[in-house]
Length: 411
Image (tube, rainbow, N blue to C red; front, side, top):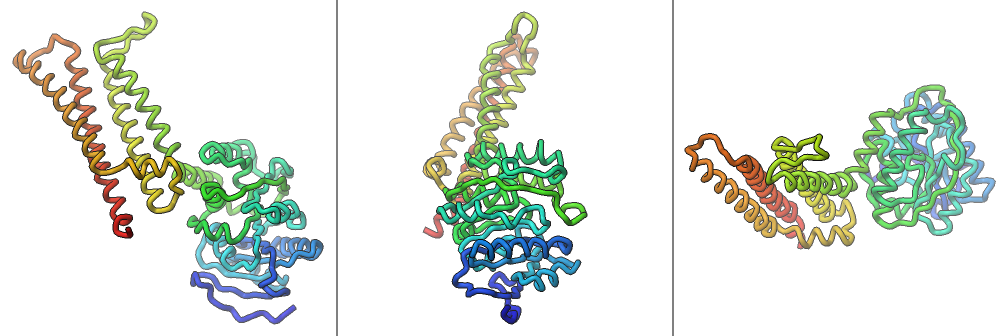
């Protein structure tokens, strides 16, 4: 074993590296990367298994520990076990992995937790798929086998299946275990994604951004066993589950804004159209009247607002590069112009004011007393709703223009 090189600073200025190199780094095919935070009971075991895999398969590689502030001796144990080590000052699972990816020397990276829940001696499927040209290879613990007690029932039956289903639905990704911590990838491809999250949602960001970038993704069975730390996991079920869900929603304006907005607008418009001329009886039992009509107007306003939010979110995502433009994004970029929105807003406001004005004149004719025509309050509500939608649309048009200022400046 060669003498460790002096500690040096990474270009990100928040990690320090200490290398113990057994092969020329220019020849490395694989980096086995493990984030670590107080894993003294298991880190040496994981390193030994990873080294055994590299040696037994004749793979030119390294074992890299990305320590995130351990105080239990994990750092010393990792260093004495012959692993390369980086100390990451920025806290978080994602921060540790991002720094590890930057510091890795392998063409491919296989990452996994340093808690001895994953079998680092059995990485053949991952490496094989990477050699076949796949950019991201996910493990599937449900197909490979989960040891009793290794995954909490809430995660097994609810959290993982639901979040994985949402990921497949939102992004059409054929992955059944979105949150498997054992995964491999082509380092250059993942670096190009410029992943931003620092917490547990880093795992979801990697998959989503890879799919949006149209990288080649595969899934292979892997196992999960009870970890050997003998303490509670760093994972916080509800907090981290919400962070994953929030990330999936924010990266899918269609499902966060467009589809709910279309559904709510359709329901509101249906109720308003049905009841604009008077009450409607359903089956001779239920009578829908003015209150239901007002609810329909309110639903329409809310639904249109959500659709507008969706257009704004997609527009912003496209011009900032957060999401690829794509066919729908390009259409939104072409269509969403401030002048066009102001024209639509002017028409809606004009129509709303005209309807309200007609109703006001009808009320004035009875000296602002009781109205005999029960349709007048309905038309008043309809006119006000159109005016509100028009005002919202106009201001949204200006917001599109504000979003476009940096893009115009660059061009």
